[in-house]
Structure formats: structure tokens, C-alpha cells
Length: 126
Image (cartoon, helix red, strand yellow):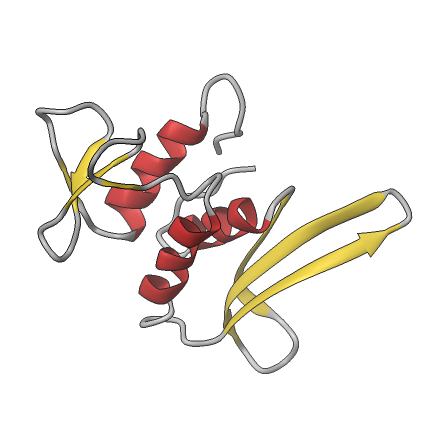
């Protein structure tokens, strides 16, 4: 089990998501870059190519929702507010008994989506 932090930062999560969830090809010639499903060049850093940082960018995270949603069409994203603060929760694959096959919480919606989407591929990060 991996934990976000010093060992696993946003760039590592982007790489896990790009290769593990999105099924993109790693581009070895440029660090943290991939070839997406349309053959377009994507990079983690801001360049002239389309950026992919799903841990911090909701648009990039939503690309995962669209990709994973093809396999698990039921998706939920909610904000829970408790006595000690709030958190985002994302889930894929409802079993119609008020339970989600893959679900995760995060400080941001993007983080919750990343963690839940990675679970659909057997990658668990706490």
C-alpha cells in the first residue's frame, strides 16, 4: 500500500494514472510524458502540449471518470461535511445496495477521483 507524500507525489500519481488507468504509453524520451489514446503527446509539466496532472487538475481527473466510466458506468462524487471538517468522496461501480465497488476520499475532488480510479486497477493508495 502506498501513501501520498514524500515517496509518492503528484507526478508519480500522474504517471500511475496515465499508464495504469488511462492505458497510455510512457514516452521515454521526455520525463513524465505519455502518448494518449488518440496518439497525442501529453506532459505533466506545462508545455505546448496538453498537460496531464489529475491529482491537482479537475479537468484531467474528469478524463479518468470518462475512461473508467466505460467499465463502471455508475459514478458518484460527493462532499461530506463532518464535525472535524470535510472531504471529497468518489466511487465507481455501485452495487445498488448503497455500496460502491471502488471508493476513496481526498482533500480535493481530483484527489478522490484519482484514488478511486486507481483502485479499479488494483492500485491502492492511502
